[in-house]
Length: 99
Image 1 (cartoon, rainbow, N blue to C red):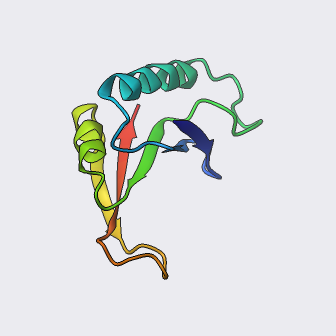
Image 2: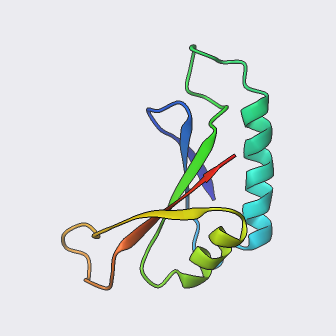
């Protein structure tokens, strides 16, 4: 599981999650990222830590991941097509959680 900053200093992406990512691992990440949010001292200087929202993308077939994300408070906010060239197995889904 990896955190990626975005150009919006309040938003981060959580990547390298899949059906094998446990609820415990997700909860641990949420606790860590929430601590980073509240200990931020970089206002207006960098986009390092302190993000207030997390998003992740769920691929078709990652039903366990989707269920686990909802269990820890993420909500499904958008669906969109996969990139051209990928098998047409369904849409990607964006999940987001405010810390």
